Amino acid sequence: MQHPFRRPLLAAAAAAALLMGPALAQIPAAQAPAPTAQAADPVQAALAESRAAAQALTRDLLTAVKSSLAADGPVGAIRTCNEVAPGIADALSQGGMTVGRTSLKVRNPDNAPDGWERAVLEDFAGRKAAGADPATLEHWEVLPGAEGGRSFRYMKAIAIPAESPCLTCHGTDLAPAVVAALDQLYPADQARGYRAGDLRGAVTVTRPLP
Ligand code: HEC
Image (cartoon, rainbow, N blue to C red; front, side, top):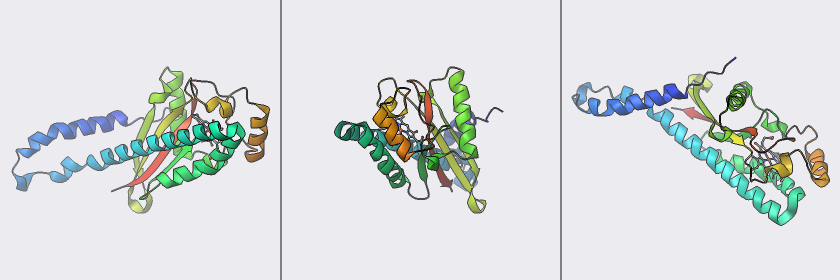
Protein backbone atom coordinates (compact mmCIF):
# COMPACT_ATOMS: atom_id res chain seq x y z
CA MET A 1 0.00 0.00 0.00
CA GLN A 2 1.32 3.42 -0.92
CA HIS A 3 1.79 5.56 2.15
CA PRO A 4 -0.04 8.89 1.89
CA PHE A 5 2.41 11.68 1.24
CA ARG A 6 0.89 14.91 2.44
CA ARG A 7 3.74 17.32 1.96
CA PRO A 8 2.33 18.88 -1.24
CA LEU A 9 -0.95 19.56 0.58
CA LEU A 10 0.82 21.23 3.49
CA ALA A 11 3.02 23.21 1.11
CA ALA A 12 -0.10 24.29 -0.79
CA ALA A 13 -1.78 25.35 2.47
CA ALA A 14 1.30 27.38 3.42
CA ALA A 15 1.40 29.01 -0.03
CA ALA A 16 -2.32 29.82 0.25
CA ALA A 17 -1.75 31.39 3.66
CA LEU A 18 1.04 33.51 2.22
CA LEU A 19 -1.12 34.60 -0.72
CA MET A 20 -4.03 35.37 1.60
CA GLY A 21 -1.91 37.57 3.86
CA PRO A 22 -2.09 40.87 1.91
CA ALA A 23 -5.75 40.31 0.98
CA LEU A 24 -6.70 39.84 4.60
CA ALA A 25 -4.86 43.01 5.59
CA GLN A 26 -7.40 44.99 3.55
CA ILE A 27 -10.38 43.57 5.46
CA PRO A 28 -11.45 45.81 8.37
CA ALA A 29 -9.84 44.49 11.55
CA ALA A 30 -13.15 43.59 13.21
CA GLN A 31 -14.03 41.20 10.33
CA ALA A 32 -10.59 39.75 9.67
CA PRO A 33 -10.71 35.97 10.13
CA ALA A 34 -7.40 35.98 11.97
CA PRO A 35 -7.56 32.37 13.30
CA THR A 36 -7.87 31.01 9.75
CA ALA A 37 -4.94 33.09 8.56
CA GLN A 38 -2.79 31.80 11.44
CA ALA A 39 -3.91 28.16 11.19
CA ALA A 40 -0.89 27.02 9.15
CA ASP A 41 1.65 28.64 11.48
CA PRO A 42 1.94 25.98 14.22
CA VAL A 43 2.57 23.34 11.56
CA GLN A 44 5.24 25.44 9.85
CA ALA A 45 6.86 26.18 13.21
CA ALA A 46 6.81 22.49 14.14
CA LEU A 47 8.32 21.59 10.76
CA ALA A 48 11.14 24.14 11.14
CA GLU A 49 11.92 22.93 14.68
CA SER A 50 11.79 19.27 13.65
CA ARG A 51 14.13 19.87 10.72
CA ALA A 52 16.55 21.74 12.99
CA ALA A 53 16.46 18.95 15.60
CA ALA A 54 17.05 16.27 12.94
CA GLN A 55 20.03 18.21 11.57
CA ALA A 56 21.45 18.74 15.05
CA LEU A 57 21.18 15.03 15.90
CA THR A 58 22.89 13.97 12.67
CA ARG A 59 25.64 16.59 13.09
CA ASP A 60 26.31 15.83 16.79
CA LEU A 61 26.42 12.07 16.20
CA LEU A 62 28.76 12.44 13.25
CA THR A 63 31.08 14.67 15.26
CA ALA A 64 31.10 12.18 18.14
CA VAL A 65 31.68 9.13 15.94
CA LYS A 66 34.44 10.78 13.89
CA SER A 67 36.40 12.02 16.91
CA SER A 68 36.01 8.68 18.67
CA LEU A 69 37.13 6.77 15.55
CA ALA A 70 40.23 8.96 15.37
CA ALA A 71 41.01 8.72 19.09
CA ASP A 72 39.90 5.18 20.00
CA GLY A 73 39.65 3.24 16.71
CA PRO A 74 36.54 1.35 15.53
CA VAL A 75 36.01 -0.82 18.61
CA GLY A 76 36.28 2.15 20.97
CA ALA A 77 33.94 4.13 18.69
CA ILE A 78 31.35 1.34 18.86
CA ARG A 79 31.33 1.78 22.63
CA THR A 80 30.98 5.54 22.14
CA CYS A 81 27.97 5.01 19.84
CA ASN A 82 26.50 2.61 22.37
CA GLU A 83 26.93 4.97 25.31
CA VAL A 84 26.72 8.40 23.69
CA ALA A 85 24.11 8.08 20.89
CA PRO A 86 21.05 7.67 23.17
CA GLY A 87 22.30 10.54 25.37
CA ILE A 88 22.71 12.91 22.40
CA ALA A 89 19.15 12.13 21.30
CA ASP A 90 17.84 12.64 24.86
CA ALA A 91 19.63 15.99 25.15
CA LEU A 92 17.88 17.23 21.98
CA SER A 93 14.48 16.00 23.19
CA GLN A 94 12.98 19.00 24.99
CA GLY A 95 9.62 20.67 25.53
CA GLY A 96 7.59 17.56 24.76
CA MET A 97 9.60 16.85 21.58
CA THR A 98 11.31 13.48 21.16
CA VAL A 99 14.16 12.98 18.68
CA GLY A 100 15.66 9.62 17.76
CA ARG A 101 16.82 7.35 14.98
CA THR A 102 15.11 4.33 13.54
CA SER A 103 15.49 1.85 10.68
CA LEU A 104 13.87 -1.17 9.03
CA LYS A 105 17.05 -3.04 10.12
CA VAL A 106 18.02 -1.85 13.58
CA ARG A 107 21.21 -2.43 15.49
CA ASN A 108 19.75 -1.43 18.87
CA PRO A 109 16.25 -2.91 19.38
CA ASP A 110 15.35 0.26 21.35
CA ASN A 111 15.40 2.05 17.97
CA ALA A 112 12.81 -0.26 16.35
CA PRO A 113 10.14 1.67 14.40
CA ASP A 114 6.51 1.90 15.49
CA GLY A 115 3.76 1.28 12.91
CA TRP A 116 3.73 4.83 11.54
CA GLU A 117 7.54 4.98 11.32
CA ARG A 118 7.67 1.60 9.58
CA ALA A 119 5.17 2.77 6.95
CA VAL A 120 7.21 5.94 6.31
CA LEU A 121 10.48 3.96 6.10
CA GLU A 122 8.84 1.62 3.57
CA ASP A 123 7.63 4.65 1.61
CA PHE A 124 11.19 6.07 1.61
CA ALA A 125 12.52 2.71 0.39
CA GLY A 126 9.93 2.69 -2.41
CA ARG A 127 10.80 6.23 -3.47
CA LYS A 128 14.52 5.42 -3.45
CA ALA A 129 13.84 2.31 -5.57
CA ALA A 130 11.95 4.60 -7.98
CA GLY A 131 15.08 6.74 -8.35
CA ALA A 132 14.86 9.37 -5.58
CA ASP A 133 18.07 10.51 -3.87
CA PRO A 134 17.70 9.15 -0.31
CA ALA A 135 19.44 12.22 1.13
CA THR A 136 16.45 14.34 0.03
CA LEU A 137 13.64 12.21 1.47
CA GLU A 138 11.50 13.58 4.29
CA HIS A 139 7.92 13.22 5.40
CA TRP A 140 5.66 14.89 7.94
CA GLU A 141 2.10 14.54 9.11
CA VAL A 142 -0.30 15.95 11.68
CA LEU A 143 -1.84 13.06 13.61
CA PRO A 144 -4.24 12.73 16.53
CA GLY A 145 -2.20 13.14 19.73
CA ALA A 146 -2.70 12.30 23.39
CA GLU A 147 -5.82 13.53 25.24
CA GLY A 148 -7.62 14.74 22.12
CA GLY A 149 -4.72 16.97 21.03
CA ARG A 150 -2.67 16.90 17.85
CA SER A 151 0.78 15.48 17.30
CA PHE A 152 3.30 16.51 14.65
CA ARG A 153 5.51 13.72 13.36
CA TYR A 154 8.50 14.20 11.09
CA MET A 155 11.01 11.83 9.52
CA LYS A 156 14.17 12.56 7.54
CA ALA A 157 15.94 9.74 5.71
CA ILE A 158 19.54 8.84 6.62
CA ALA A 159 21.61 7.69 3.66
CA ILE A 160 25.10 6.20 3.69
CA PRO A 161 27.26 8.76 1.88
CA ALA A 162 30.08 7.64 -0.42
CA GLU A 163 32.86 9.23 1.65
CA SER A 164 31.81 8.44 5.20
CA PRO A 165 32.89 6.35 8.16
CA CYS A 166 29.54 4.52 8.25
CA LEU A 167 30.71 1.41 6.44
CA THR A 168 33.36 0.70 9.09
CA CYS A 169 30.50 -0.42 11.35
CA HIS A 170 27.53 -0.95 8.98
CA GLY A 171 29.27 -2.23 5.83
CA THR A 172 29.70 -5.58 4.13
CA ASP A 173 33.34 -6.18 5.00
CA LEU A 174 33.72 -5.60 8.73
CA ALA A 175 37.01 -6.09 10.58
CA PRO A 176 36.96 -9.15 12.89
CA ALA A 177 37.41 -6.94 15.98
CA VAL A 178 34.40 -4.86 14.89
CA VAL A 179 32.29 -8.00 14.40
CA ALA A 180 33.31 -9.26 17.86
CA ALA A 181 32.45 -5.95 19.57
CA LEU A 182 29.09 -5.71 17.76
CA ASP A 183 28.20 -9.33 18.53
CA GLN A 184 28.86 -8.70 22.20
CA LEU A 185 26.86 -5.45 22.51
CA TYR A 186 24.12 -6.17 19.94
CA PRO A 187 23.40 -9.90 19.65
CA ALA A 188 20.34 -9.16 17.45
CA ASP A 189 22.18 -6.66 15.19
CA GLN A 190 20.55 -6.31 11.76
CA ALA A 191 22.45 -3.17 10.68
CA ARG A 192 25.28 -4.74 8.66
CA GLY A 193 25.75 -5.30 4.94
CA TYR A 194 25.09 -1.75 3.77
CA ARG A 195 26.78 -0.11 0.79
CA ALA A 196 27.41 3.54 -0.07
CA GLY A 197 24.21 5.16 -1.32
CA ASP A 198 21.93 2.84 0.67
CA LEU A 199 19.10 4.08 2.83
CA ARG A 200 20.24 3.34 6.39
CA GLY A 201 17.18 4.60 8.26
CA ALA A 202 15.75 7.91 9.38
CA VAL A 203 15.71 10.52 12.08
CA THR A 204 12.29 10.59 13.71
CA VAL A 205 10.78 13.54 15.58
CA THR A 206 7.47 13.68 17.45
CA ARG A 207 6.08 16.77 19.15
CA PRO A 208 2.72 17.96 20.39
CA LEU A 209 1.00 20.59 18.26
CA PRO A 210 -1.01 23.46 19.77
C1 HEC B 1 32.04 3.11 15.21
C2 HEC B 1 30.98 2.35 14.63
C3 HEC B 1 29.87 3.09 13.92
C4 HEC B 1 30.00 3.97 12.89
C5 HEC B 1 31.27 4.48 12.24
C6 HEC B 1 28.64 4.35 12.53
N1 HEC B 1 27.74 3.70 13.31
FE1 HEC B 1 25.71 3.80 13.18
N2 HEC B 1 25.53 2.69 14.85
C7 HEC B 1 26.59 2.15 15.55
C8 HEC B 1 26.11 1.62 16.80
C9 HEC B 1 26.94 0.95 17.88
C10 HEC B 1 24.72 1.87 16.83
C11 HEC B 1 23.72 1.55 17.93
C12 HEC B 1 23.62 2.78 18.82
C13 HEC B 1 22.65 2.59 19.95
O1 HEC B 1 22.85 1.68 20.75
O2 HEC B 1 21.65 3.36 19.99
C14 HEC B 1 24.40 2.56 15.58
C15 HEC B 1 23.14 2.95 15.23
C16 HEC B 1 22.81 3.63 14.09
C17 HEC B 1 21.47 4.04 13.72
C18 HEC B 1 20.21 3.89 14.55
C19 HEC B 1 19.36 2.72 14.16
C20 HEC B 1 19.89 1.39 14.63
O3 HEC B 1 20.31 0.63 13.75
O4 HEC B 1 19.91 1.12 15.85
C21 HEC B 1 21.59 4.67 12.52
C22 HEC B 1 20.45 5.27 11.69
C23 HEC B 1 22.99 4.67 12.16
N3 HEC B 1 23.71 4.02 13.12
C24 HEC B 1 23.50 5.26 11.02
C25 HEC B 1 24.88 5.47 10.82
C26 HEC B 1 25.41 6.30 9.75
C27 HEC B 1 24.59 6.97 8.67
C28 HEC B 1 26.77 6.32 9.91
C29 HEC B 1 27.78 7.12 9.13
C30 HEC B 1 27.63 8.56 9.14
C31 HEC B 1 27.07 5.48 11.07
N4 HEC B 1 25.90 5.00 11.59
C32 HEC B 1 28.33 5.24 11.52
C33 HEC B 1 27.92 2.12 15.16
C34 HEC B 1 28.45 2.93 14.19
